[in-house]
Image 1 (cartoon, rainbow, N blue to C red):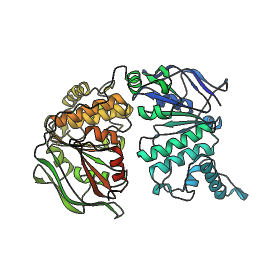
Image 2: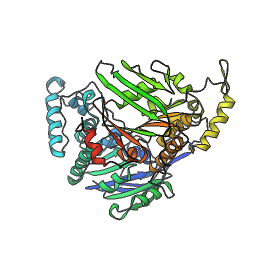
Image 3: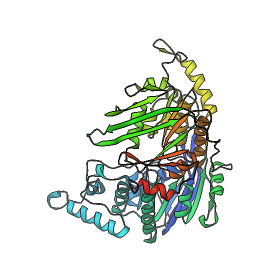
Image 4: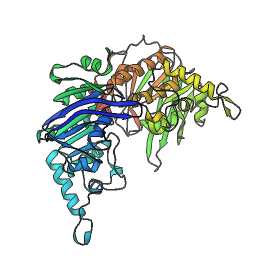
Length: 503
C-alpha cells in the first residue's frame, strides 16, 4: 500500500505547523523522517493518522484520494501510529490492551480472550514481537511495552506503521532488538515511517530520508550517501558541532558527599542499596545504567524529592539529608528533572510562570504575598534571549512549546542564577542535535565556572562526551567506576558493567 501526501498544510491559529508538504510512503521501505524539535513532524503524522484534519492538501492511498474524519478511519484504511508516549492501560494484560476497542466476541457477545491471546502469539511469531499475552503491562520492561504497542497496530491490520521517536526510552540492547523487528516488518511488505532525532539510528535503519524544517520538506536523500554532518545541517540550517568543548580537568573540593545511602520504593523494595559517592567542584560525574537500576531513586533522594531510609547526604559541608527541596535550591543546587512534562513544567502555565516556579518567593519577584509580575516578565524575557528559547512571548503556554524549547526553559530556569551544583537527569532525551549541542555547552559552562555536575543519562555517547568520571549502577548499587580523563573506557566495557558483569 502506497501513501502520498500532497500539498499538506496545517495551521494552529497564526502558527503554520506544516506548509505545502509533499511526501510519499512506499511499501517494503523504511522512510526516515528527520527534523528539529518543532519542525512539524508529529503534526504531519497526526494529519496522516486522522488526529488532525489538514487545512489544505490531500492524502492518497494507492492513487485514490481519501479523507479521514478521525483515527478510526485511518486505522480502517491500514494506517497505524505508535506514539512516543505509550497508550497502554497498566493494569490490563497484554492481550486486553491489544484488543481494547476492537474486542473479539463469542457466544452471547462475551469477550473472547482466547482468540485475543492466540492472535497476539501469531503476530509475535510472524514479526519477532515476543510478548506474553497474559502478562500485566505495568510489570513489563519499556522495550516489551513498545512491542505491545506495535502488536496493537498490527492486530488492526495496519500496512503503514508510523513510529514516533521509538527508541527514546530504549537501552542500546533494546534498540538493537527493535531494529530487527523494524527490518522484519519492512521485509514483510509493510511501509514504515521512522521519526527520530538520532542521526546514527536514522542512517542505520532507513532506506530513504526526508528532512523537515520550519514545517516544510527541505530535502531528501539516500542514507548510504549522506553523513551525520549533512543531515544535521539540513535539520537546523547551520553546521553543528558533534564534539564537546571541555576545558582541562581541574576538580576542586567535594561539593556533594553521599554516604551509605539506601532508598526504598513505594512498595518497600530496595531501589538504592548502600551507595556512596562524591562530586567535586569543576567535575562532571556521569551516572550510567539500564533504566530501573536505581538511578532515578538516587537522584530523587539527592534533590530532596524523596527521603532515604538510611545514609547521609552532605552538600557544601552541611548535612542536607532531611532538608527541603527549597533549602537545597537556595543553597545553589539546580535540578533538571528527567520528565520535563510531568515534573519539570506545568504545561498549562505560561512561559514566565514556569520560569519562576522555584523562585517566585524571592524578593526580586515578590513583595509579601504579592507576585511582582512585571519583574517576572522582564527577567523571563531576558532568559528567553540568553537561552535561545523559541516562543511567541512570555505569555505563551509552556505546553505549546516544542520538546526542545521546553527543555531549554527548564535549563534556563535552573542555570540562569547563582548555582554551585547541577543535577541533570536525561537532559537531552528526545531532543534534536541543535538543542543537544546547546544544552551540552551550558553544562560545560557550569563546569568551567566551578559547579559540580551529576549527569544521569541513558545515552552512553553523552556520558562519554561530558563526564570526567563514570559510575555504573546495577540493581541499586555502584558496580564500576571509570575515569575518562586517564584512559577513556570502551562503550562495550561500560555496557558489560551495566549488564551486571562487573557486579
